Image (tube, rainbow, N blue to C red; front, side, top):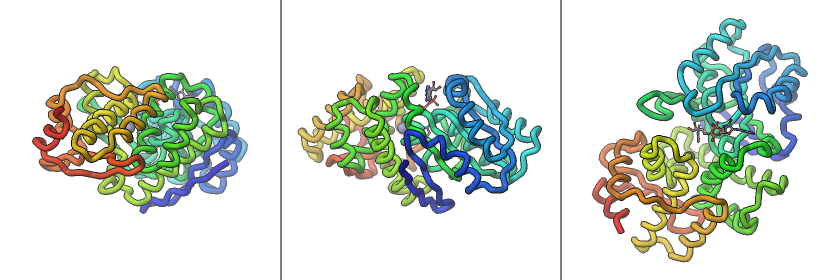
Length: 355
Ligand SMILES: NC(=O)c1ccc[n+]([C@@H]2O[C@H](COP(=O)([O-])OP(=O)(O)OC[C@H]3O[C@@H](n4cnc5c(N)ncnc54)[C@H](O)[C@@H]3O)[C@@H](O)[C@H]2O)c1
Ligand SMILES: [Zn+2]
């Protein structure tokens, strides 16, 4: 098993990664939350039948009373009604400030479990047990929690760091292929913006990382280290953490324009490809490097462009919550493994994207 230590300003915690990490859950929770008597395990209808029993028996083995909250799987349920359901269940069971929440599932689940924990009794501990690739390498690390509202995704939430993140990479075996591919959007993003060694490893693996347990564990570990180092440097998203938005300014627009029918990770890949092309045209990125990066996306079954127009991108991006004032922070990669934050006006961004 491998450990990544996250040093966020508000809390320091470990991410444990391994193909049998689940066997450590009981002892770790006992050590970190010695006063806990009750735990609400939040999960959903796809994941609970596969792993809830395993998690429950680990938690019961240290004397915890386990209460589960299982919601219907899917982003459409990442809403306040489910959060209220979690609050009520904890209140009915007499949870106190030393009791805990555990999130068992993909990013939808970990975002909601974290938000419920951040608000119940003004904040109780949360243990994250991510089960999708995206949740392991991205959503469960860094303390962003939240829900969607009709006006937009992730519009309500809180920064709430977990007490522990436990990533059992053997859980990835049951992940549908398409969902795994989506997670690769964020994995390749980490390689492009900050991790040349990861880039090389992914290239060498030639698109085959799912079936090699040791390699998969190592790749998850490298990604968690990347995300942790950015989060540790910038907990609340004002500086370096913004580089994690590479491909997202454009990707979010494509995602929204599709009515959320195109998956997030796929849209991010398209967004990264579009920005790479623009960097090549601007003369800041070497054409061969752009080709190498796009080939890596293709190797992992991701697209590298979309037919969205520059005007649609710019108009959509200006409605995005991540803009600040009249300028946009656009993340560029001008060298494999290094990102740059560039402020652009609407006009500059349009010109940059226009062939
Ligand atoms: N907090 C953050 O920093 C952050 C970062 C990125 C994404 N997110 C959020 O994460 C969410 C997307 O995460 P996601 O892609 O994991 O979505 P998800 O939670 O919907 O999971 C994707 C699908 O995989 C299934 N699944 C998950 N683990 C499985 C397993 N081991 N075996 C079988 N099926 C499994 C789920 O049931 C679901 O159908 C979005 O809501 C997004 O906003 C948050
Ligand atoms: Zn993303």
